[in-house]
Image (cartoon, helix red, strand yellow):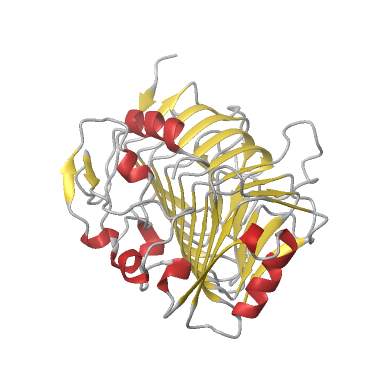
Length: 379
């Protein structure tokens, strides 16, 4: 089947084929002066023409694009007045990680940077609570930073960076790989690998890979490899007002062998940009309860079973309104490619655009670069 693409365009967008020039070096495992990291601002970065290459600069950026760059920006632990930078194996090992975060509550203006160089298991603690803290970076070292059966839960947390970690098979605590809730803000989730089992477990055995809810906002989820899960991501825990997160950018992520919720979006403003979706069995971008979503420059391959939804009647595929909720959401489809994915019925139902500067790849470029650059060990 020949790929199809969107031929509609609603609202302004930035020039494609222009990529931000990124000056820094990767943070994971490398200490940088606070001022250097804080100075890396994507809104003021210069640009250069792209010839459709690997764009390693974009994949290795030391600052987020999208909503996490708004509202004052997201710098993590390097944005503190002073920076407490530690390597986990030298600070007491896995069991000390929660203690480091709890102690950081007493110094809210300072920064905490933890380089995670070992495996943290369910025997160390049920979940990692990043609670009532600001200015924190959790950075995996190489491919050594692993959470096996342990999730990371953010509550009332601001200016948080989580990069280069492998998180898998989380069945304890809330059951999410990463959960962002309780009015957390300015969070950057970048270059992680998160997975469960699919389809060989019950659909409710695990929860989501990355869930945002409870009035959390200004979040960017970028360059992650998310795979093998029934439930992938959501932006609200229910249809109720106040249950949702808001102002979320999902950019340059690789979704592979998942069932649905890529993501499930309620009441949120979302930019779904330059992602590669492969083998999504039932449904992908699920827009409900008045959500406003810009779906731009993505490559959908083998996405959706083509069945009519029993509740809404929408066709199961790349974008739609499925599985309940009294109201649909609205989607603006710009320059996406659909390969072996039901799409003849697709058209924009809204005109939402974002008010920040960004650069966009073509879907083919996104597929190539995300396949090569998403996940751990890349920064």
